Image (tube, rainbow, N blue to C red; front, side):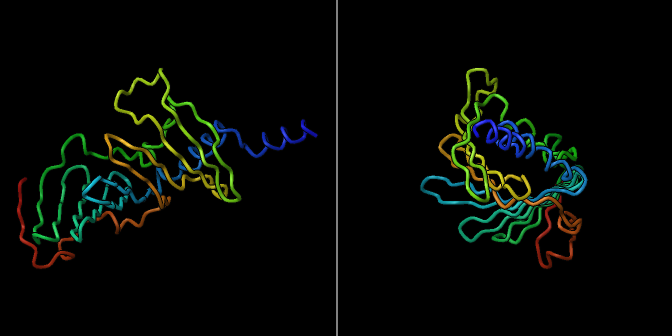
Length: 200
């Protein structure tokens, strides 16, 4: 009986290593189809800031909301556009080299558990809940000491990733593979009346 259960677990890939490997495999289509997700930054005293991110083919768009203020940023790796809803200003500038997208939409999840000891904390009907604890071999000094990763049983995509860095709690969630090209394409007509500040 015990041997049968072990074979069943192996077949369904329920060890932490197999779950992570399947998650990375499920993200491969993002290389051509794009990726979107929401990121919550829970900052003490200030509150929670939410950023919606879209990435496709070297282009990015992010929408950040905090205290009723929205900041929308586009980049195609050459030019950046930043719209401030509070000031009603649209700033155009050259993309910084570090900000140039390389098309690796799922890059942030590649090898995400390297330097961590991963354990299965809980299993529900819909998801696996993994705990990632930083080990002594992790070369990244600024890497979080702990990450909580939830992976969907339905499609093996990450449901959420939670970590705390320098007192700020960061939660990645609502991850979707597949982005409409219109989402990452800047159009001046979408910001009528905005003051243009061209820094190129």
